[in-house]
Length: 209
Image 1 (cartoon, one colour):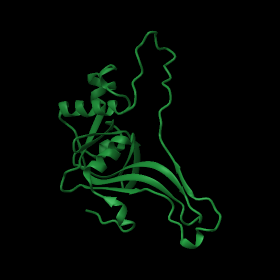
Image 2: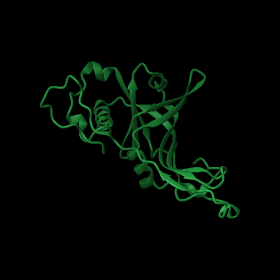
Image 3: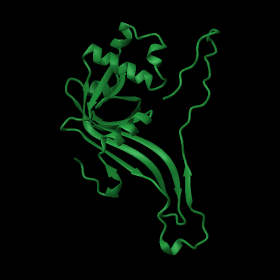
Image 4: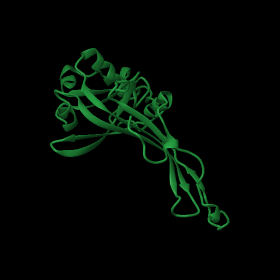
């Protein structure tokens, strides 16, 4: 496992805590090297057991780089929980939860496994959404690739780093008169906005998990 160099007390490998962050976050960033250059792509992800899935066009650089050999990647999933305002500018911070995964992403070739992964990805944007929309055609499936990252693989490093709590002000600043505290930050979904060409009645919009 990679050894953190700072704030090691904030790091854990507890798998339940890791799963909670992966399942709550709607997006991740996938870092990889291709054509001699580093790339970082934001994308949707889904977890099934100890496997993390991402998908994209078969022509996308990330997907083409993963064939025919597994692609070394760094996947980062972050949640912002609060703005930490200290009495001093130096001690301002963020409350957050962030999972970093180093591993080898592999092309999913089995059609059944690919179907389960794509359904899980669609369900991330709405509860049971994969059963409430038209399934992909064979042409659409052929144009879509799925990568799998085994969280339990010996070559995979998985760690969660988090900060919680109030500012860590210097004792000399406590009576300075400046305001300090935490401003909570939450990602919330607004009301569904139906497509302008949606017939009526058309059923209920799905809810986020």
